[in-house]
Amino acid sequence: MNHITRKQRLTSWFWSDEVIRSRYVIDVVLTSTVEIPAPPPRLVADWEREIATRLILEPGDVEEMPLARARARWPEYRQCVQAVADWTGVQGLPGVLAASDVALMACRGARYHHDGEQYGSAVFCNLFVSDDKGLDLHFPSVDLRIPLTQGTVVIFDTCQPHGVIQRRSSGFDNADFPAEQDFTQLFLTWELPVEDEHVTRALNVVFDIAPSTSKHPDEEQVWLNGASVALCPNSGQWVEAQ
Image (cartoon, rainbow, N blue to C red; front, side, top):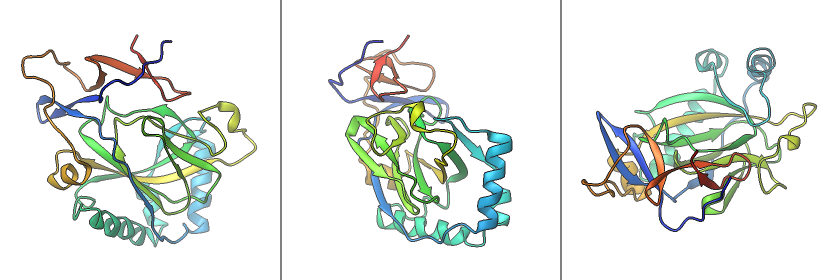
């Protein structure tokens, strides 16, 4: 596996309606900590049962949780959403959150990955609702580590490599997540459309960077130096696509 040194900015190819469009991968990551109430014990117990009996999370897994059921047992859900909406408004994104799809996710750490092959037309906005368990959200390409605590909120490009790792670690390692310890993190995630004018302005998105006469793929992917690249799940470094 040959690691690639980034010599120029990465290109995201994404679907815009029925057309494949190009843009630079965004280096900007917005983050803060908002004040939210702790999830009620009844809801936390329900999450623990769901994870233990259905998801059975292994180290590095990221899986969707049933949001509708959680909302029925989460009186403060709207308060959590409002805290994120207020914060995104301050970032220059008024109304974008309310118009975007939301999901509830659970992870037991996360191997390094990007989501540009499925969500290249979006940026993610995540609100972490679990306690601090000694984990960081790590963006290796921009050398940024964000401690995950209750109320951590972050907006980032879906194509930007990211993983959830131990705070003391320099990369992802299954051995850092022994079965006898609880390293599960729950978070709400919204898909904000990258072509929304507020998102474009706040994150300095630059579109249509590839010449119209150049070759382009017929599916969403990330390119470096004119070719598709893959990501090492343990280091978060770009490698040659197989």
